[in-house]
Amino acid sequence: MKKTIFVFSALIVALLILFQLGKYSFIRGNMAVELIIAIIAIVFLFLGFYLNRKTAAPKEMAPQQIDTKKIKELGISQREYQVLIEISHGLSNKEIGKKLFISESTIKTHVSNLFVKLNAKRRTQAIQRAKELHIITP
Image (cartoon, rainbow, N blue to C red; front, side, top):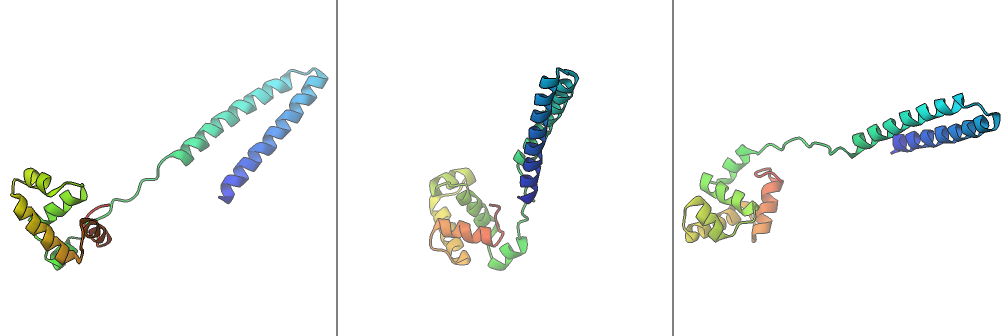
């Protein structure tokens, strides 16, 4: 934050100096100084574009690794894990059943097993707990 304040303060001071030089060159009638001021202004323009692009660029986060050891420790089966992933995508039991080609009652069984293994009472708690344990990506 201090760096940003310093950069903008320096830019403001430079602009004030340029305005004073412009006023001085107008009084003297010397147009060469105005040409130099225009070149400096263009440099500042491109510097502003560069700083904006640098600060506005989204920061890439490191991909979070899934803790497969934790999945095994909790005793979550491969099918239960698939159901957990689909729950995290916001799908209902019926939609999960259609996607995984299994019955809705089997999905309910997998979901209830996940609740027990993740110590959760609701789907949202299960997803939150899975994210905390790094079982699924946020």
